[in-house]
Length: 295
Image (cartoon, rainbow, N blue to C red; front, side, top):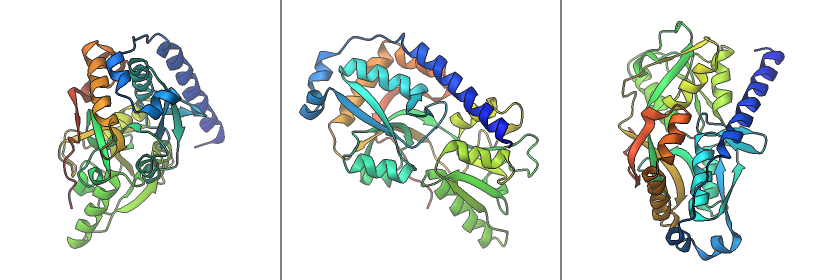
C-alpha cells in the first residue's frame, strides 16, 4: 500500500472518529444513585475509572491518537453517566498487556469486548455483553480458496497476538502437519489494523478474527476484501465477549446491572445498531458465560 493511501486511510479514520464523537455528545443519562453507591470507595473519591484497550478494534474501539470512539466508547460513556463517574481510556500494546494491566490493578477494567474463555476466567472475570463469530477476511475473489479452517493448511494467516484465534489457528496448524499437509504460517500482530494491512498488502492470505470488526474492515476496503467461512464453527463453540475486571472484583456485578439499565432504556440497542452490530447483541449481560477453547 502506498504512503498516500495510508495517509488517506488515516484521515478517513480521523474524520469518522470526529463525526462519531459529535454524535456521542447526544447521550444524556441520569445517575443511578443505587449503582453509584456500590462503587468502591477509591473510585468514588477519584470520580473516575480507567478503561484500557489494546488499540483499534473497529467498530467497537477506534483509537485515533489519544481519542477512542466506537461502540465501546459510546457504551462506556453511557455507563459512566449511569454510575456518576468519568471514564478515561488508556492504550497498551497487545492483549496480554491488557489482561496483565487489569489483573494487576493498574487499570480498573477493559470494556473490550474481549473473548471470554474458561482458561482466562481463572485470573479475570468477564462481563459478557456481545456474542461473536470468527471468520476469515481475504482479498476479493478469495484467490487462495480459504473457506474454512481446514483450508488454511499451507496458507499465511494473520491473527491478533495472544488472542483466541491465534490459539485456534495454531491447533489447526498442528492438525495440518499430523495429516501430512503443510502447516499454517501464523503471523501474529498486536492490533487489528496491522493484521488487516498484512492481507491488503499480500503479506498474508487471510486474517482470522472476529466477524464484527472484519465486517467493518471489509466495508472500508473499497471492494478489495471479502469475508469467508461465515456461518461455520471454525474451531469455536458459542463465543461470548465482554468487559474484563480482576477476579472477584465488585465491578463485575456492578457492570452487569449498569448494562441492564442501558438495555432496559434502549441505549444499548441504539448504540449497537448505530455501529452495525445488531447481529452481535444479547438479551441480557452475564458473568463468565464463555465456553472452553479447543485443546
